[in-house]
Length: 550
Image (cartoon, rainbow, N blue to C red; front, top):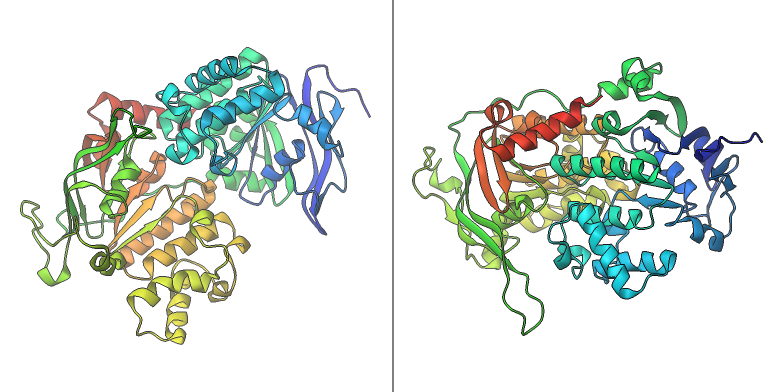
């Protein structure tokens, strides 16, 4: 074994990973030096996260193993290291930010306790000192109202806010190596830029090494000194970021760099009949805790009006906490709100396409039993396809559930036939309906979630970050699928995303939200080319800076 350079924080040599008899990573050799950022890129299933988890020795070693290879952190071998010795490395020498914070944060403990626990174990801090450090860290990662958030539970934070808490915890002990596994997946572009700037600043200030795992090539361009490309468990190419992006050698790398959502929205009639209209919609939350606490009202959505038309996509953008998802949940009557929500009734004709008169059916105040009949007209596709698909049900059971409720006259054979046809529409084999969600990739699971929503032939589909957890190539496929389904069925989409490239490829109209209010609205193409407000300009600038960074 050759001596490693003095500044080499991580060295992986000929690493293989097997789950029982199946090798999922083969012969990976790479390193990360102090002060350097190495990005590992590749599609889902390429082995990049498995490689990162191997560094932390967090694989399920009751059936996982390393047939070959070595992993050294600061020169110390970690493969086969006992648990007590690994505890001294995890969190102290090596920190990790996981892709999905809800799987890492304890839902029963408030944020202060979870950050403080790291400081108690590794720094021996007292309660007061740990609280002060926790506040410092939450401020550092840009969490709004950090003092209030200390007593919050994970479910009370947005996805982006939870990710910032995870980053704060990972940085708590100023580790030598930070492993960031998709650290910006759940964040909007402006917060992405802030977090990436933060990670880069901390890396330089602490002379830390950063191992970055991501499918976002804009992030890689901005952050990475060197890039390693993985495909189906093999390391197919590595080199400087300039070399990888400027002159990729491997065919897979070239294909990966070329894959991203593009194109224009489906042609649509700007005067198409309305599907839904909301007027002066407001959602308020009482933040006060305890029976005697002073009332504290948060206006999550404040006097918002929207119109959604047949065959069109209304895009909603804004930072985390701006009210995007809250607005969508209110429109679907999944949370309480004030104001008017009108759903077009086909029996009333096309309604007022000029948009000046009330039309359709008022959903606000409708009893749950009656509202249930209209659920088939309003469907939703969530951000995380795995979390939204019941793991114990087959694909057939998942997709046919809506048919059993809204078309009870159908036989089991008829339902199965419709499920088969729906799977074909979303690009999956009919045989997929006899399998379970865990047997599919992230992109395939999202196709299943889309099939579940579309099989009822709804008029409105809410798409809440449907591509954020997917690789670029899969994102492009899902965008193409959504456009095809919209063209075929004249679907109305309410599309929520922080990825402006995806929004631009789908949206006809666009609203920009901040602090629960609409700060700008209009034709999507115009807003992308010539935003009028400072906030929208900052949002667009952050997105394009990320996309164009070299």
